[in-house]
Length: 251
Ligand code: PGA
View 1 (tube, rainbow, N blue to C red):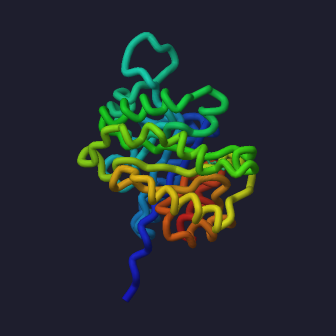
View 2 (cartoon, rainbow, N blue to C red):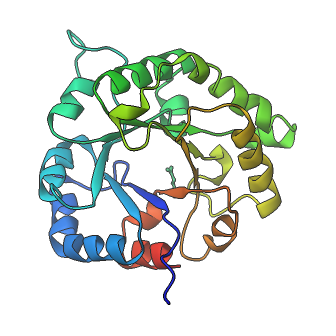
């Protein structure tokens, strides 16, 4: 009897790498194979393109198992906020997930925990599942502060009204150490086990799924995949190349 593979979540975070043309060409070329891959591997695959391509990619994958995510949303609901995208707007084009709190936004755009909490609330009100990124810096890690930093980044979660019936997954949390993003460095299995075991004990909303992100490739995925506490992966650079993405899903 063949065993059904464990159901992992794979989020392709395309950041600001692709233009609209490049993102839609990727989907035209590989979309069918991506759907087949999701079915074969019993995987939940979520593509997070830039806003320009989100609508057309979401429409492309309508009525398929492939989901889409925005890479961020505004902490405001509507109004005079030039350059921002509301959770309502993201929901209106049919996307069902949204990344918040990515370290590139925390460090480069000054996103605070209070703003991230507000974004989370806006998303839940629009029926979108938040993908909340948390992670410590190299300095935090060196000074043994990892769990304290993660705890501070999650401090507001317990008071957020998660209504699990609005989505199949109420919340995704991606542990992405800042020092591992785009560097080729990944935590040891012992480090991952410490963080993910701790995450299991802190009373996160029921149904929360826990992901790892940071330099995930087909060469580095073995160790996080051997940790039974990890439900999936947030993948940046390696998700741009279809063959590489396929290899790491298939690993
Ligand atoms: P990376 O990025 O896979 O390129 O390290 C991950 C992320 O920032 O989500």
